[in-house]
Length: 126
Image 1 (cartoon, rainbow, N blue to C red):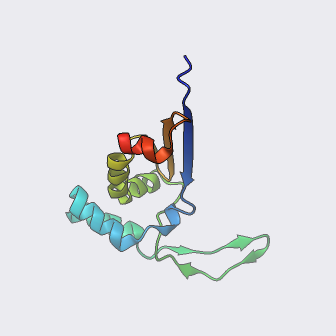
Image 2 (image 1 turned 135 degrees about the horizontal axis):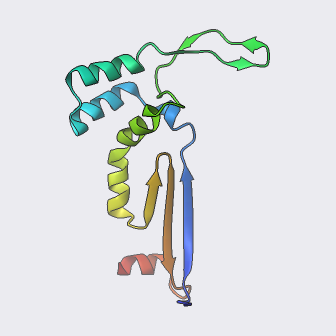
Image 3 (image 1 turned 180 degrees about the vertical axis):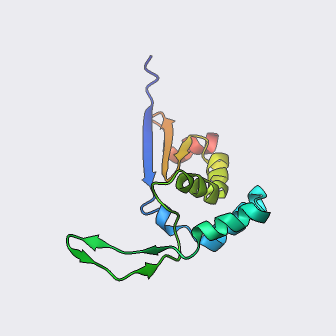
């Protein structure tokens, strides 16, 4: 059924999202917003602490350096920690953009409107 509407779609992919998570903010969010305390919080603090990394390109390996941010990728815990880290942002998106869908570091926002109305007029009516 043709409703003579067009749909505007915006796709957002946060680059290096898992690498940019601030450990202190994540741990504070887990404690204050999700009630993670005691041994569980200590374990997560240990899990994130003193992580080291090197970069290997062909036969050349970098010096070892400490990771100050980010969660381990490839683990089942990484995506969960990321989702908990951005949960507050997801609440804001859900409240103000009902036609938005988020999954981990990907967001889709869509808005349908009749082409004979401007986006601002259509948004003002809602």
